[in-house]
Image (cartoon, rainbow, N blue to C red; front, side):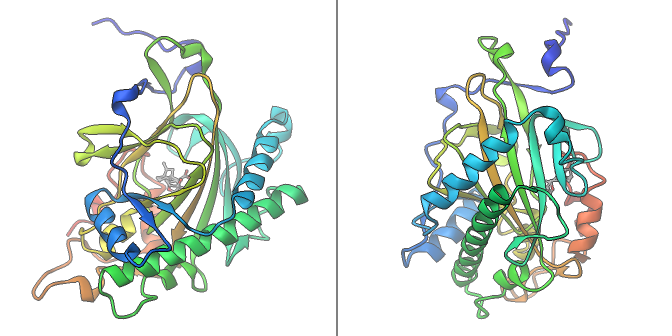
Amino acid sequence: MVVLANPPVVDQIPLLRSPGPRDTFSGVPVVDLSSPGAARAIVDACERFGFFKVVNHGVPAATMGRAESEAVRFFAQAQSDKDRAGPAYPFGYGSKRIGLNGDMGWLEYLLLAVDSASLSDACPVPSTAAFRSALNEYVAAVRKVAVRVLEAMAEGLGIADADALSSMVAGAGSDQVFRVNHYPPCPELQGLGCSATGFGEHTDPQLISVLRSNGTSGLQIALRDGAQWVSVPSDRDAFFVNVGDSLQVLTNGRFKSVKHRVVTNSIKSRVSFIYFAGPPLEQRIVPLPELLAEGEESLYKEFTWGEYKKAAYKTRLGDNRLAQFEA
Ligand code: GA4
C-alpha cells in the first residue's frame, strides 16, 4: 500500500475528495416561512433529511451583509491580533483545532455565547463596537427565525402547546451558542482532486442550528445514513436549518439529526454564521409525550441537556454521540 503524505500546509488535516458538479444536491427542501404551508413542509423536510432551507424569513439582507463584512474584516487582521481574541474555549477565537480531543479543520472561527437575544456580556469577544453591534443585530434576527421555525414545527407535529419547542431555546437560561467560521481557500491543493476538510463530519448536539453563509459552497450533508455525501448549493439570502441530536430525541427518532461537514474551496473563502439553539442545562431531553403512540417507549435513556453537553465535549467530532444514550 502506498501512503501519500499530506502536503505540508494541510499537515494533520484530513483530505476529502473535491466535490464536482455531480455531487450537487438539487433536492434541498425549501420552506417558505411566510406561507401557511410552512409547518407541514418543515415536518416533511425533518423526516426526510433533517435539513432544509428557509426563504422569506424577513431578515434584511443588510443585517446579514453587515455582519459578514465585519467578520471578513476581523479575519483579515494579523494573526497576532486575532490570537489576542483567543483561546476558543470556553469562548473566543480559535484556529484549526476543533473541540478538545484532537479534531482539526482548515478554518478559523469565533465561538461566542449568547444571553437572551444578544452576545453575552461575559464574552469579551468581539471587542470592537462595530463588529459586536453587527453580530448582535444578526443574532437577534436569527434567533427570531429559530423561534418561528420551532413554532411552525410544533404546529406541524400537532403539539397543542405551540411554544413547546421554541420556549426551550428562547426561554430563560437557554444555552445558545453562536459560531462565526472562516474557511480560507487552500490553493496548494488545487488540481489534485482533493480538498482540505474545513469542518469534519458530525451532527449538532442541540435542537436545531440555523446557518447562513456567503456565496461560497462547501457544506455537504449525508444522505441515506452516510452512504452518500452531497453538496448543498450556497444561497447567501437564505438560512439552512439542521436537526440536532436533542430534537431527534424529543421526537423519539421521528426526526434524525443530519450528518454534515464542510469541504474547503481551493479558490474562494467561505464565511458562515451558525446559531445553535440549545435548551437550559437542566432541561430534560425526553420524547414529547404527545409524539409517543400508545405503548411506544422512548428509544433513549433519560438525560438533561447539561449531561449531554458534558458527554459531547468528551467525544471526537465524528462520533455517534447519541449511541451511549440509547435505551
Ligand atoms: C458541533 C456543533 C457546534 O459547532 C459546537 C461544536 C463543539 C465545538 O466546536 O466546541 C464540538 C461539536 C459541536 C460536538 C462535539 C464536541 C463539541 C466539538 C467537539 C468535538 C459548538 C457544539 O455545540 O458541538
